Length: 439
Image (cartoon, rainbow, N blue to C red; front, side):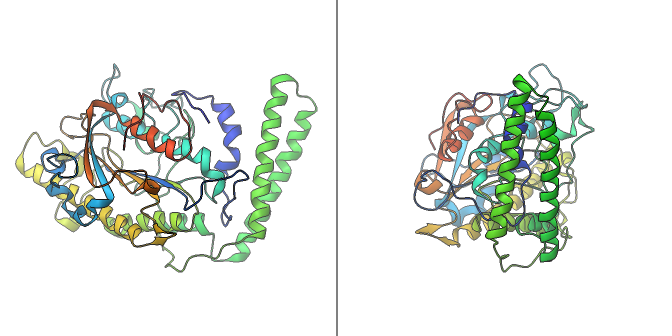
């Protein structure tokens, strides 16, 4: 599948991805009809942290395998051999480029797309398809959910959030097309039910019957249109029929192959503390990968510009506010505490993945997880020298345990392009990419 885009054909993408966007619960992974590579499936995840970092304390020193881990990343020390820190990556399209203020919205919107967001607070949003959704389009038919989108923030799709930019840009990492975000889920219980269905099997059966009824209705309506369609419209309807049939096939497989829910505690709504919330979402992403419910995920720890506080670690001031530190040492020390907090939770997630045996290795061996943000120094709002970690071993294809220094202004999308290649997506470009990164 070859991709060269920032602006996609929205109508065609809708028809092509209809079966994927109507993901059904309790669906057994579909097995590819073509020959696939032996071994465990490869997973791809993106974890976003907001508002930049204390750059002096976040970035390691040295180079290669002999680099020295930084104070902010010390919680990851035990996992040193399972990740690499990448320096020098940039998000040029998160810069103003003539559009004025709005760096927070652009940082979120550009992180996985590498495209310049159209500056608007209205309905005419436009950006580009995100890297995770390119992967989902390639491998999403193999799992119950094509992809999983998570956040600790309430999802927003409209409104004015940052200097004339729509909230859709600031609250969504994943974009199914240039105009359609894939909104993340905030409630852990909703995530669990999306993955494994309700505990009430009768409700699951009703849900399946309801979807069948909807499919029957739309198919009947489309057939009436087909009798009057000609030329291009007829081709569009043919694509539509194909998409509906794919959904029918997923329902049929769901009826034949039902998977029991994993033996874990069912989440009961949004946790009271931020730490519990983060851990619940990380745990759900892990179990989604472990059960092969999806192979593609994204997790927004918080949106850029977030004014969340961190009373659990004694930071009672708003994150975004202290990120404008003006080199004040007190504020910088608070930012470092937040950076270390996020690193500790990421370390916990990686350890849990490492401890899950799968085939001849572990879940972490068979994964690629990008952790980082679209702003480096929150005071400068700069989009170069981004704080980026690549964890996992990519089925033996990634060079973990090192500090990788890239040439200045290397597009972050070069990393996306490299990981997509490992996922089987033969994309020519992702946003502003210029080539694959050797990771």
